Length: 184
Image 1 (cartoon, rainbow, N blue to C red):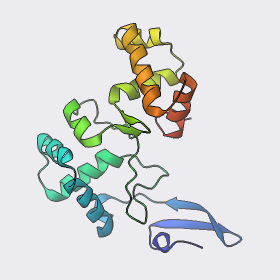
Image 2: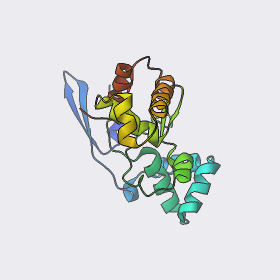
Image 3: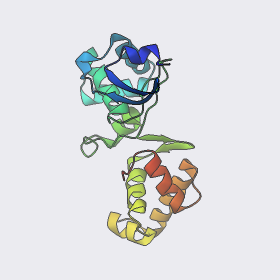
């Protein structure tokens, strides 16, 4: 049984024995988004005062551009996970934004919110450490590479483990791969 919303989407469904087993979805530009999706994003933006302030700080004033920027900052990457379900639930995911280097930290906290984990929000600095942990660097090498104290690197790692629900570096690595923070 193919859900009705997929039949209407910009997708290709390949079936075997009458059951879909692969869905190939094409990227839609913002201008091509269904109005229902734009309305959902707009409703999320309207309910998110910090994100509105962040857009003001960035100087984004046009309503359509605000919706586009908000959606981009919250979901930016094109991956195999739906950003909105057929019931309207929003599933934000980690997105390694190319604008992060120039985006003010205050805006990052209010707009992209970085990445939600099981027990908190991972900051850009914690994401940076996760990537170094995945490169199999010790806390000492991470500290040296980032120009921070060894104890600071160790505290960051502990915070990451707590936020992700991991109990070890290998658990952090698993979390990173499962959530697209690092790719195989």
